[in-house]
Image 1 (spheres, rainbow, N blue to C red):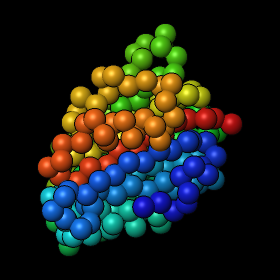
Image 2: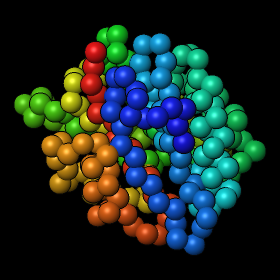
Image 3: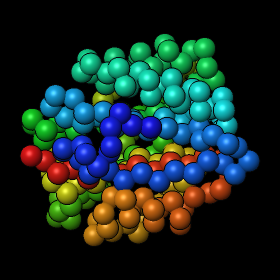
Length: 206
């Protein structure tokens, strides 16, 4: 789900690929793109399990993101945790692209993969992975620390839920658009045993 057309985000070009587990009618993996005054927030949540109850949990998390007022992503995680307590819980990644100072702040709880690929291969390291904290929002919230890093036009962030094989980043090419990128990942690395969601965001800058 998204508050807006993802392609309309001024700082970031997005691509999305998703597929529900074949025995279920609903996808328990959700995403949201939210534009704020100085940046763009991307959230991906995976409700525990699959099907309707997983989808409910993921949608609760996304409703918290939809109401985000710029209070910082750690307080947003804490709000999601409190709101998810009546549900089966969810894991989630957040990334905030700040167009004022060209930084990205990201944080993850659970097993949603997050990889940032640099457009300039001479940058060291050329690829960075999100530091995932063990836990489940709504059940057990770990100590949270957000990572802030500089980001440059063309840098591409990919979030993928655990319905995607975690080797998906081994053969990626930034020559592809974000949408083409996620379609390739989905078609080649979807496990078929769980809900699956891949979101790619390419930073444009201003």
